[in-house]
Image 1 (cartoon, rainbow, N blue to C red):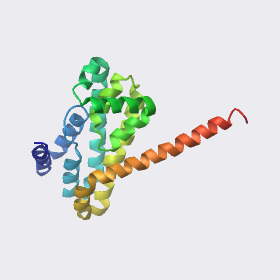
Image 2 (spheres, rainbow, N blue to C red):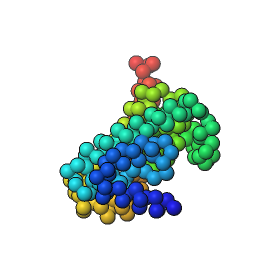
Image 3 (cartoon, rainbow, N blue to C red):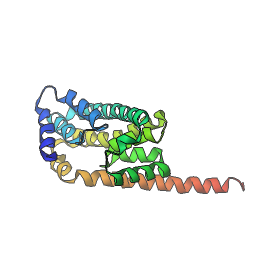
Image 4 (cartoon, one colour):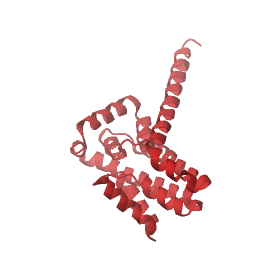
Length: 198
């Protein structure tokens, strides 16, 4: 089912309405749509690598906009929406918000984690809108911008690599981000502990 849906999504790359549908699906995926926009972004960018960065920017903006709607729904409707998702996912998301806040949203925007769960949860858990938007721009921007940059510079040579190892790329980028956050947290804690004695 999902495979057929993904094929249908990618087929829009051959339509003049492709960029508009990319924006629509990017926004919808941040709220409810089950397929991420990456396959359509890749297909459209490979048709004309010179447009890859522009398409990546469009995807980032539309996804962030959809995320804001998800955030608003989370605040207005609350937990009943989250109960539609798997309870294990919701528990993991809540733990991430409690422990990491801003960085949980960045991580969700960057990795294959279900971003829509995080957008709704951010509203449910009262994450302020401005930090939410900034975190979404960072996470989504790095993810889609990374795809755009790769295709802009290397075009078709990365098509097969992206198709076969996309999840691995996203997980690796997420791991690097977590490592950077961990290093920053240790540095901040040490500076904080040294501050009173100085």
